Length: 596
Image 1 (cartoon, rainbow, N blue to C red):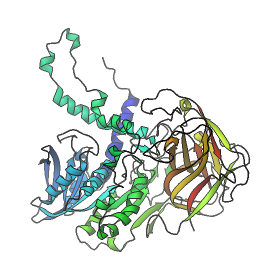
Image 2: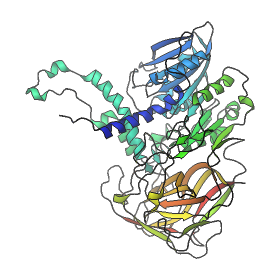
Image 3: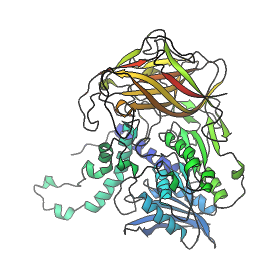
């Protein structure tokens, strides 16, 4: 007999599902629950057949008035019912709002497989929505996370009546920046997201595969199965496919947004967040669409807004993780979405067209700022060299950061043991927090370890702003044929609190290419670059800027077992002695965008 779920497991499952729903329910905050429907007509489970005969279902909210209205469409795997408050508010605002369950989810037919059908189903749904008798033929899309993927994949298909998309915290490439990063498997996201989605898959299976009548023939009576659940491979076949494709191959290229920007011909309002797991893709989508989108109107119609949190904390609260960012941070994602569409689809002169295209929240100062573009043209790429007077292992070490290049200095080394990996403490997580938190959390427990190298600046005497993309240039060697290198930028407060800002990872076998991995030669020195994504933070007087370097961040990323074998099947672990060089001929450095 199956044991009852423990309270802790129940809490974890609840957190996973809550985070999965965050992408849509953040929009629901724009309207009170049970909003007055006197001016709104709501149609439930409206059926639409896709080109291959599979029926998808949607809820439609529309003004209870004569006339034709622009359509706002969301296509979600997280249950269309979760968007009812936004649907009501949108309809009251003069839109037809359509919320559809994607293929294989909740009320829609078919089999669920991420990304596979979103272009064709998105195209068909956009064109159907444009042809509704109360539609004026203009369709915009909205929503976050995977719902951002449904928008981009629909836009790539080029439905003629799509007029704009508004993706909130979503990726640009479903290999690097979604399933993998720097070649490492995004284990906590992939595990927790898949588990959360499998709950509905099990429910659908139970509804279609229960056969109590035939099971009555089974003997002995205790063999009655009650319910037969499918094996894991059938619950989430995509999960094993993701593991089977660790390299950037044709499996991933067919869905890559960044390889198909020229096919996107509509304006895009991209929303992202510091500490969000998909921040890198959000920023890349904006910057490259401004140059590569398929029409001049699309290139000039790009807008970007970056707040704090995303999957790590939403948008309606001032505190994310362990840090209170003040009362200026909270804002209404749904209202921002509607305001943009009021201008784009409604032709309302609300000032959107006169605003600068980029709006970011600057941490440290904890205030919003408008910008002409991203990345900031006035930010100066500045190299902070890794230096040391004695070994840089842990907080008691002698690691420093300096704008003065090193002369002759001894390298740093540490032993990375996959069986005792550096734990993930906060950071850009989904779906749901780990016991060690989410978003900005105190990193001192990690810095106390001997397998974490710590490099710090002196305390700043004046405000020092870092805003933009960040990279870490390292000269490294390892005793293993494959290992990982991690980097984390942190802000050290005068009271000792160590706030993580942004981080990255590189699996050594992918140092030259995500498509063709190459194992290393033990002891050979390699020049590698880690993408630490981006941040915007003012280091206040008395604060220090710090870099942590190690070889694991688990379970956010899977542990490199250091053996070079297939990560999906490997079980054998070995320790690796990893070395970081910082001397005149091998000047390892942190590259920061310093804003004057």
